[in-house]
Length: 293
Image (cartoon, rainbow, N blue to C red):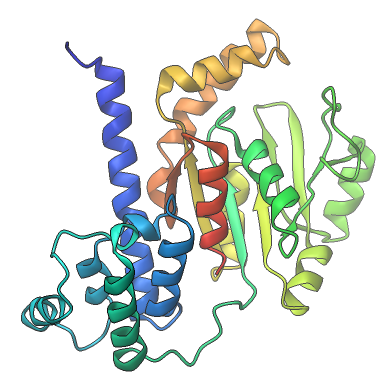
């Protein structure tokens, strides 16, 4: 059976996104921002995570001073296959690897340090659903609430989903410098991120998740370059169209405008630090949370 072109393209994007994400984890280990033992622990406790999909050799490559020859000797001594992934290790292999990492790459940092993670992506990709899962299941993370001039959709709650304000109040907040970022989205409504709650949470040691549009993410990168930018991808273009048309909250004209915008937004993914494909809400949400550690 011939695989449809759209499915091949989606599979290719997913594979590329996974490779980039694993490379980012390896880089964090090499720069001392994450511990190698911490990566192994997450791979063990969360078999669906990015860490679980890393090869043992990938993790070892992130440890300073370990070259190709040394890595080959290490995995041979630990009786681990070069193709073995962290999530597929047996109990004895995990213990041996954990003991080696604790001795070879001791970690003196703080993996629980607060950080700002920006979640963006094309319309209807599921940003709101992913962020809601995190809010309901990871109490230590503050989910930033944006202000917007658009009308509430069915089920949205003021102060929880968004702060719904009129144009005059939005103008006042701009003039007062109360926004970390703000932008006009889909050539209609304005959205903005109040800065005070974010600054307060970070000062208290709490990580913050900011769900915004592409324009807003660019502004955050300029004002807070230490923020981690995450781009949420759809499994395929066809699935993105299905999600948008299926929710029934926009007119056909609005749907067409949003799909046109989505094509432009997808082209911006290379500007982001991490790419995550939203095949499954919980898996995508856990991957986002892992980037906060």
